[in-house]
Image 1 (cartoon, protein in one colour):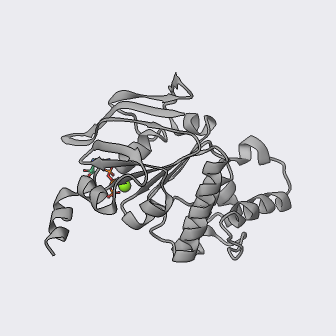
Image 2: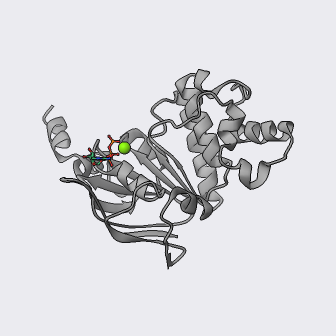
Image 3: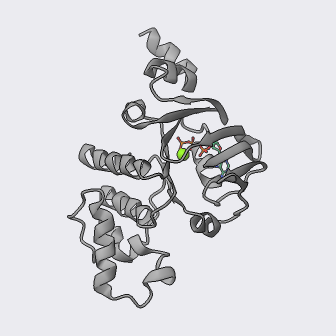
Length: 245
Ligand SMILES: Nc1ncnc2c1ncn2[C@@H]1O[C@H](COP(=O)(O)OP(=O)(O)OP(=O)(O)O)[C@@H](O)[C@H]1O
Ligand SMILES: [Mg+2]
């Protein structure tokens, strides 16, 4: 469904991403695992139209994908939840969930219907206790994260990219997010799940790619390598230290 080939991006002297090649399949949860600074968010930003690669191509549905800005990616069915929680703090929860969609299809739609759409989006995470009319900035961080997730889900994306979205969530909300991810993959979407947490990888992934120092060092089906092997591929020195403890 989605292929990247030879993607590279540098920031001055820093090579953030180097010659990254992967093919992603529809209907899968594809985890990208990597240490801090390994290039995960750089890949996410390229696949969201936030930054442009220096080299390489993206193919989508078998054709070269030429979108060069966030709107182009969104129109093609991409949605991203970024590592930083991006909300409009003074706008209410409903507005934050429907942000950007208004001009497309909710203009002129009654307030009740907008609230209902927002509530439905949250209920997909089993969330019913977030006040729809409260300013989003007044909510605890975990609730803000769920609002941002609902904003992505309400677009019914074909490709949903989640960059370290579970950090602010408690165990129960994490499980709800994982359940919805599986549901969306089963319905045919591609989920690209970025994490550095090994415990999440096991539970969730169909396929796993490992980024190390900007290089995609391997891609494989989940269940082939043990956690120790994945850790060794992701962070050889850390794995070495652990094995000596
Ligand atoms: N705007 C930027 N300007 C300069 N360097 C950058 C910029 N964005 C990223 N980098 C550098 O590129 C490399 C990859 O960064 P990236 O944010 O993609 O890593 P990451 O895997 O998402 O890390 P983390 O786990 O901390 O989120 C790092 O060395 C980072 O410092
Ligand atoms: Mg990152």
